[in-house]
Length: 149
Image (cartoon, rainbow, N blue to C red):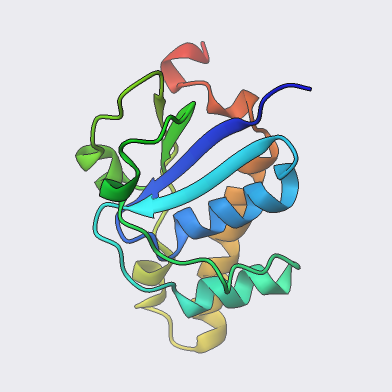
């Protein structure tokens, strides 16, 4: 049996996108991928993210935001930044970790302009589904963009 691939999803707040990615990865690839998420400036778990993930049968309600500084001594195969802020401030990871950027829009920012809760949730659902498509393609989807050509 092959060892599990070790993946860290990194975001600024570790409250929404990276949490969704962690939940999807555990749900879809839990037998093959050891996954966690963290933030450069962690904030509490986004309740709308919990809600929309629950709609598709993925419970992330017990996940907690973590600071990336507490994970710098871990040996990851991949560190995936899911927002531009995390890409810009991604710390250096020792060892063999490959840094891959796959940016997704920020649902809380998109939801600020919503005129109803349903409209706000539609932004979360769209990003949730985009993250799922990315996670479904693991591990092939982890190739850096400059390697894809």
